Figure 1: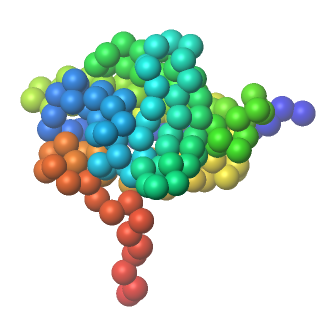
Figure 2: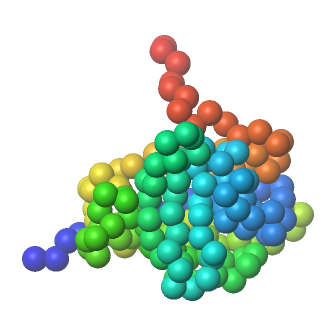
Length: 154
């Protein structure tokens, strides 16, 4: 029996340059400012990458490998919870496509090869919009948003 797979695509437009968007994703000291995590790798195909919480514990939360890298327009990585790193079936794939678009950038994040209804699939549907909104705010204003904000009561 094969598992049902799903994907998630998010597109946003950012008043920035492809170079700055690519740097914001790949440079640990920049990512921590809008994501609260650092993406750590040498960003060469075949290399590992780690998503490390930017606090005193420095917990590795996500892991994967760099599949493709073409600065500043494309990055493809595999993605899994660190606790499931030894299970090849737990990995999904994330593609960052960065395109110059008039005076801005169109960033398309495609997270695919996800097991439908899995905890990861559910989590990224909430996580990516918040993270990418924070990235946009950070690059346009210098400040990210609070990724842990909760809705106000009605």
